Image (cartoon, rainbow, N blue to C red; front, side, top):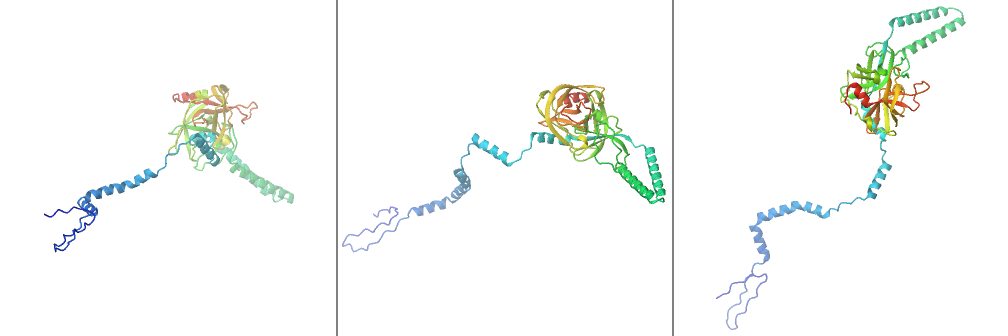
Length: 372
């Protein structure tokens, strides 16, 4: 009986027939190898193998990232110090005062009070007098050469005077409440201005409610406020508080997204704390000056002399005529006072290092805002 063939990777040599049998030697058929078995297995499991291959292919990038990624660097204090020094050497950082002023900048307004209207009769008299002077000058021109030269000089002087009256200087320094020279007619057809008062204010409610000093708007017949974007609006007087030298205005028109200033608390103040004053000194601004709190709970007699203001903040940030009504601001950008007065023993309206501000608590209680 013939034995079954065993599978092997090698061909089995033909066994020789016994001698003398006379039969021809036939080689055995080679058996299938391992490659054939793999091919057969792959053919039977092709779908499973394709799925596994797809999964492996999709995971190769993640595997490579995991293998190649470097461990996170541990920062030391020296690394942090080097980074800080590099930043300070290569970048200009804003000062604390600049940051504080910028946080309140869009809430500061220029306040202008029109004290009266031009007397039209007086203007008519001036015009009549000017015409008479011109007629006299023309008549004198017919005289001697000396008289003609004098008449010419008179005409030139009259022209200069007329030009000065119709085109006064753009900026006129003035103390809040003082009368200024007559201004030009308003371009919107408003009345001539006989005098104006210049001061500052701060928006405390984003609907256009503004806090300023009473002496800034005292005696004014019309009030105007100018916002940070240049918009000018007429304002209405809501209330005055002479005992605190404060006044509340309401603008008739306001810019879009008008921000109200952040109100802080003066109770946390200590002498030496940094503050900035923002306003329109001599109608120049908005201007920023920096200083420190010099003292607390001071007393000062109001500019009108009728009231003694108490619980005032004394500070040394430069303040001049026109700063009145503007905010006194901490380094956190919080308004903690309203600039109200300066002290000058010589009676001049210029700053010598001592300014006073009404505390924001006093201002809040006066205008009906609860404590902050």
